[in-house]
Length: 142
Image (cartoon, rainbow, N blue to C red; front, side, top):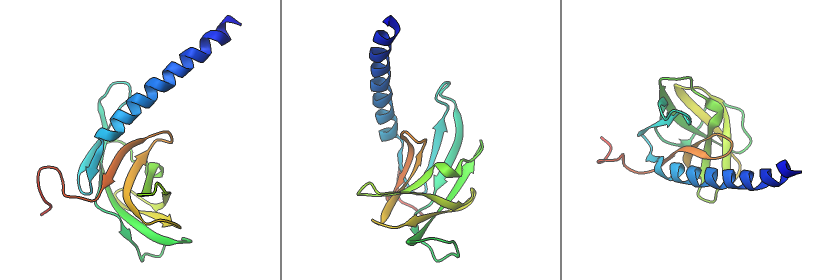
């Protein structure tokens, strides 16, 4: 009985800390398309892989889909790319999981609702990396 009484407050505190840390890290990992973002190991803080998403556009490639097909060109340096963690997202919050493709190369998204304007790398709980339209940090695109 004592374990159950202790478990609830400990779990609630862990969730609150996790949400606070997740919110802070997500806000600091928003970059414009074309800018590399490095995923850090959650335990050591060491870099594991760097992804670069070069944009998000409608696609006419021959990929089976139901709505409008979108594509994003993605490259990676270091580590093992995890394609299934990428999503296209609309301003409304509509989320479209990757339906195919590979890294390096194009990732495809089946958009059946609001038009997406960003690409996110999500671990199933929180956005770890986000790319949005805009010039790269420190200047304009060449």
